[in-house]
Structure formats: C-alpha cells, structure tokens
Amino acid sequence: MNFWKYHGLGNDFVIIENLDLNIPDNPDFVRRVCDRRTGVGADGILYINPDDDANAFMRVLNSDGSEAEMCGNGIRCVAKHLYDFSLAPSKKMRINTLDGMKDIVIQEEQGVAIGATVDMGTPRLERSDIPMIGSGRFIDNTLEVNGRTITGTAVSMGNPHLVIFDSLSDEEILNLGPMLECHPLFTKRTNVEFVRIEKDVLTVLVYERGAGWTQACGTGACATAVAAGVRGSTSLGEDIRVRLPGGELMINVAEDLSSVKMTGPAVRVFCGELEE
Image 1 (cartoon, helix red, strand yellow):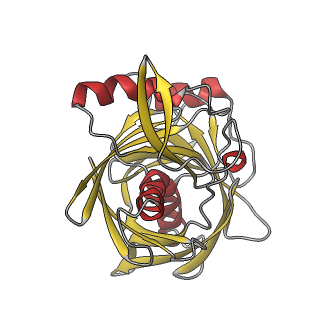
Image 2 (cartoon, one colour):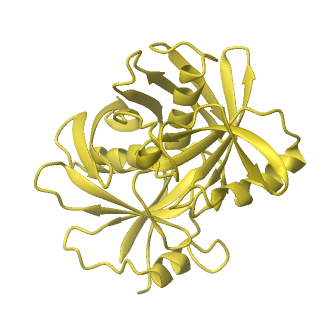
C-alpha cells in the first residue's frame, strides 16, 4: 500500500489514495500508522476518496483514530498532492469534506505546488453549531475548569474551537489544554487555542482534538482570526498573520463573516509503502 508523508507548518499527515475505497480506515490501523515510534508517525491520516462533484473527497482521521470534520493544513497538503500528481487538472480545484465543499487555488513554482489559498467557508458562532451546550453565542464568555475561571470564544470552522485570550503562564497552558478539550460544555470535545496578541500578529498554541499539542492547526488559525475579529482585537476584512510553532498562516475573515480564507504552505516529505 503506497503512502505519502506531507506537512503544513509541521502539522504532519500520511496521505493515502483510496480511489477504490478499499484501504483500511479502522481506528487500530490509523493509530498504528500514526505512532511515532512504531509506525510512520503523523498527526493523522488523510484519505483521498473519489467524489462525483469534486476533484476528491478528503477524509480526516486523527492520530487517536477519531474522525475530524475538516483539517485546514491537511486540505492544503491534499491539494498539493492532487496538483503535483495531475489528479486535478488546474490550479483551481474543489475538495469535498464532511464540512462541505472547499474551493482552492494553488500557488506553484516551476510546475510544483508550494502552497494554497483555501476558502474555508462561513464560521459558525451559535452554540448549537459548535456544538456546545446552551443557546446563543459564546463570545468572551466564562467557563470553569479545574477550579478556575477561563474566558473564551467558541467558533466552529466545521470543527469546534475554543479560543482563549487570557494571560496565562506556559505551565498553565500545558495543564489547561487537555482539560479544556474534554470540557463537558463541548458535546464532541473541542480544539483549544491559546492566543497572545503581539502588534499585528496573533501568536497561537493549539491543543488539537484527537492529536494533542501540534505544530500548527489551519482551522485553529481561522477560528482564532474570527474570534479576534468579533471581539474587536483585530479588523475584519484584512489579512491577519497567525503565528504557530511551525510557522505563519495568512487569514482573511470577511467583514460580514461570510467566508474565511486561509493561505499557507504545503510540503511533501517522502513516500513509502505500508505493510497491511
């Protein structure tokens, strides 16, 4: 079974072409492949499945075997794979996901994709869309965790995010990440973003649902820019630099919140063959 290893700002994936829909996708297989000591090692597996209405359907399995609705860094890697291996005919392509259809424009150099701009769709702020217990929006609202009060903003980019702008120490962040992921307010768990605003840059650490601390999270960068915009920390309609441990993404949230566009790199690392 052939596979390819990719990363977007250090958020790394195993990509498998599943065009005949015959590749294993059970949690045990996913965990074995993603194990960093005994497998290939990755934050998740991206399956390229066929789709009648798009260039491909991207299925996202996290390293713990759970399924995610969407992956921002992953979709850039899938787009690069489709372009570089001529599985998509042009720089403009459409990839379907559990969060719906995504329009993508490839950036290339000498015929090789180096990155992409992805229209990530409309952010959702209602608790029912996160999904989250309660009604209305959760913007600069408080929740209790481990005996302390945290202020956050909840955003769905097809998958749930809790964005926190509180001033916290590194030790507090490390402890709070896994606890907030499983907070009972979030019925399907949540990704957690810890944000520091530094001049014109949002610096973010992400505890990713199903994968833990990660070098980068594309949907997390988008959710952070949305949260910063709706709370007035940044301007909507402008390019926002989001700095993650693995590098920077450029995010633009429409003034009317109708779309979020993400631009960033995608890198192929190596290819190989898996023993089934």
